[in-house]
Image (tube, one colour):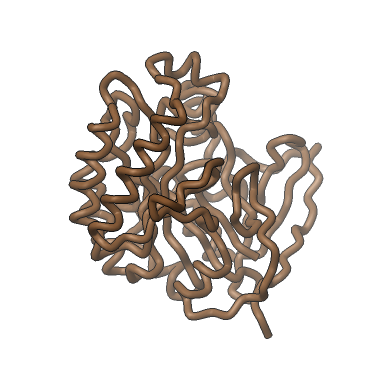
Length: 304
């Protein structure tokens, strides 16, 4: 099975000690977001986990101890660095600091295990198409030697964005094509394979692939492993990834990104953070008497 540590929250940046402790103790409990009294236990041992996938906007807190996981498990890392400043991503380090941390991470784990995520791509009066092109090229020039690929997606117009981000401009098809054309050309100029994630639309004529950002092919090549030839069902519409199990929780990320799909709002995340205990097998709080714990299915995707 594939363990995903960063789909619901930034565990790497804000729950570092908890994450390391879970792998050290060899198991984790994950609360069902739709049925809160249903809890699933997953064993975090090399014989039960094919690969651990990370996604974060700041790996600095975990870099000194990352070997505690990478020495034992195959891994793959998604590092999100966008064009936005603290007006949109208040809890995220600057572009310059983020790029330096990415380079440090790449030297530690190898570029074949590291993808740069430039997403979500969105437009405001400040963050225009030309702004994206200028920033993306500046970053691509620096990051090209240290990454396996670049992944981008267009912002999804969730209803709550009307409240959380009223300055957001609606992306037209012409906007998407202009952005894809520019990003594809810049990526090609610096020899960076580029692909979309969960985005409807075909941009292959711009040199942009849509094969999924977390596939067994990507994870296998990164770690020198052979996986079965399985159908990738994806996690949502437009997704071509292999299924994974996320051990995080919604409404817990403190990055405060205005476009966030995983938080209802920043205030709720701050309130939930107070419930966090690094020693608990759950990200938030502890087991309750009304909880039902079941053992999760953990089938290997490896050949053998």
